Structure formats: structure tokens, C-alpha cells
Length: 87
Image (cartoon, rainbow, N blue to C red; front, top):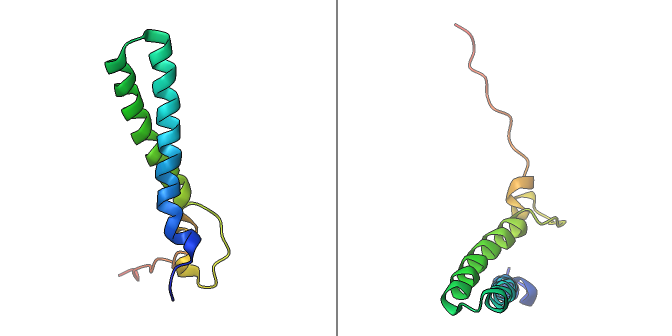
């Protein structure tokens, strides 16, 4: 079973959204401080944080898969733990 076009482009979408957030933060810091090195540091940190947050949100994305093992990681059914018989 091959992935759909949307599923293949999903990582690119996350990187682009993180880049947009980073550019916005970088421009705001540049306009307010007029310090290019500080603005680039803030943009880099914003990119990393936004990418991590978007990736975490993508992990818990709700969908209706046909196979439960294909669903979001945090929404999978867990097998009950076996209890050890008492001695």
C-alpha cells in the first residue's frame, strides 16, 4: 500500500509552517531591536520550537484508519498488562 500524495507532502507542510512562524518572529524582533544577529537567533529558535510543536501535534492527529495500528501513536489501544499470580 503506497502513501497518498497528501501523506507524502505532510513533512514538507510542517517545515514550511515552521519557517513561516520563524520568519514572522525574526521580522518582529528585527523591527523592534534593529539588531540582525539577535533577530536571526530568535528566528532559529522559533523555527526549532515550531517544528517540534507541529510534529507533536501531527502525532496526535485524529483520523479514522481502517487498521488501529495505523492510527495516531497516542490513541492506540493498549493490551492489558498480565498480572503475576501470587505465590
